[in-house]
Amino acid sequence: MPNNPPDAKLVLSRVSARFTDDKRDVYALKDISFSVPAGAFVSITGPSGAGKSTLMRIILGFMEHESGTVVRNFERPAMVFQNYALFPWLSAIDNVAFGLKMAGVPKEGRERAAREKLKEVGLEHVADHYPSALSGGQRQRVGLARALAISPDLLIMDEPFSNLDTITAEALKADLLKIWRAYGITILMVNHLIPDAIELSDQVIVMGAHPGRIEKMLTVDLPRPRDTRSTPFFTRVDQLTEIIRSVS
Amino acid sequence: MIRSVARPQSQAWHRTHTQRFRRTWLIMGGILAAALLLAASGYFSGVSWVALGDAILRTTYRLMLAYAIALVVGVAIALVVGWSPFADAFFPFFDILQNLPSFALIPLFIYFFGFTDMMIILFAVSSIVWPILFSVLTAIKSAHTDLNDAASIFGAHGVRRILYYLAPLSYPAMLTGSIVGIAIGWESVIGAEIISDVAGFGAFIKGADVTGISQAAVAGMLAILIIVFIVNRVVWAPLLAGSSKRYAE
Image (tube, rainbow over all chains, first blue to last red; front, side, top):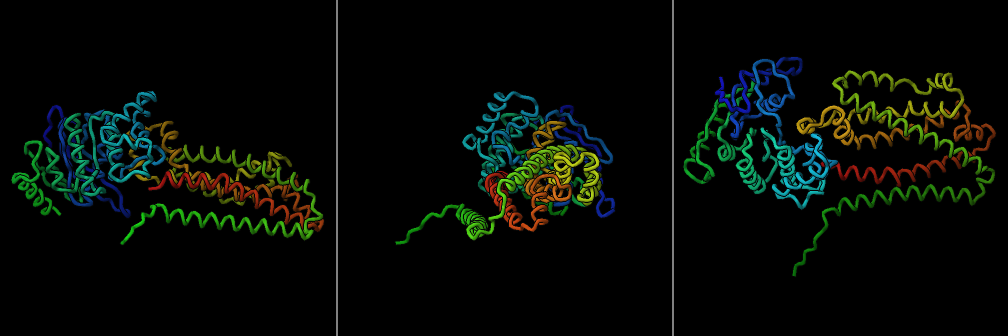
């Protein structure tokens, strides 16, 4: 059973989900239990087929689960996607303002807010560019600005760095940490990169595949800002690497 | 000394685009040259240009009106069905309707609307609407899950989802559906005019063939090719170029 702190943003208890594949019933997730405390940074990692994306969709209510309970103590979730998922017909600023427009915020207000968020992620100069004219890193930053624009109380990130080169990913990671500290948002991130998971997270959930299940939860209690060249950091990275090897 | 010259990134695209542009104009130039040659040789001497112009104008007007109606109807149905959770159930139903041999329905249209403009326009609508509807519906159904989820997370629900997500999402599909639809539309309008004998280009070439003046039919075909070419260059080509640029991955 998960630890259920009173201020948890999200609590999952024995959540299972199935889907039909070639007329066979397959468990996508089996007995998933964990909680995400308010303001925490939690990473989920694991091999392909562990149902991480399915889990995100269940948390957001886009997919039904078969059994168990999901307690959602959040009202405005936002998501940053691996493939950016920007609307190609909208400019960067209109993409960022999309959520505000849907919420009925007047044009002037939403444009001002969107411009502020773009400035925060260092992209004010490409506000009028369409996604097709932006680099991968710029698109992901627009995706992050779009998520921040609605002042989310839970930010879900699905492998946000996996399509980016190392330099861009490092810069985005630094910005993300800055934003997390400034806003105190609760973040749940799917991440395949072990050092990133240790650097960013308070807790790392390791999932196994077929069916998707939680194998281990690792609490990362290193002081922040984390020194990524320190011995304790490498010890944690080794520890997580061993856990992932044992479940793969 | 080695000198390097920067090559613009879009050079390959520009070259391909220019080649296509040249080829299109070459084809059109050929058509125009053939028409001028035939005209110079006196081939079109027996053609009544006023009657031909009147017939083409009537046909073009019917086609444009039919296209406008089909666009509104096709896109509206596709958006509402695509938005609903029953889209998959509607697909086979639309497919059956689409496969009904349209010209076999002409007696039905004549029964309800008589030998009128309205009959031909609505008959053409029944043909043009399908490629538009299917293109838009397919675009909505094949949209990337992430994009659908993004629209939902950021609040695109109900009518707002249709207006601000599904409609712009399906714009490129609407363009391609329109191009195919209009091609089918020419056939439907002209075919209906031939069958019903209602004044228009169809009735004109039917009369021309019966009286043995095939030059009029050739002149009419050339005129329609020129109209199609102009519409393609002035309307579809810029819209398609804009759409493929903006919607590129």
